[in-house]
Image (cartoon, rainbow, N blue to C red; front, top):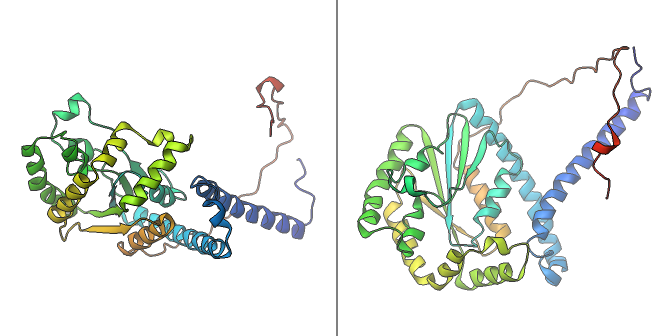
Length: 308
């Protein structure tokens, strides 16, 4: 039999604790990398004492809320709960950033994102809700819709991609569609991310001048900027005509991205009656060693060059 690690148990425990703390730091760094993408710590202002302290509070609360999301995930799996969370808002409103922070620590088999492209020719001839139905959660799943069937009330209306008759039929159908889902046991939470005219312009300008973000801009985004007022009217009609007790709308004030993320996650957690699930204690089994086992060397030609 091969010998196991000869170091005494106290040394092994210290090493284990050090590695555990490194993993925590890695998690922090992963989030920090995403924040740097928001323009190098907000430029010079990001280094003021006030903003440094605000950043600490943000990270502390984000990690705490993400811990609660893990508890929510466990509860959803155990109870077979079905949860749909809809994210709507203008282009550059911060929906994607909030979705990233919600899913960041969760199991993608339990919590998945549905971000459907424009319908193809076949889908255009289907019942309008049909392609969304296939994305709905089964028992023990949570689905986040990065835009949803409310495309018809927003972009399709503003860009004239649907007829007046199709638009009116949508508002006749959507309350009944959502009531039917709720009656069948699907919980629906709907968020509208709200930003100002000035804030959207700033975010669009950032995308234009940042090569890492230019891919986020599409001709549709630019046209939506020109039709700001039409989008405002469409949003107001949508909130008025589809705000139902079974699936109400919730408006997230999203000019401040970080506050919007925290407020959205905090509110989402408040909408589900979850509780912490007790798990059996996990014991790592001892590694089994065999004298006849011999690890074969990997050919050098197969090794990724260690450039860094």
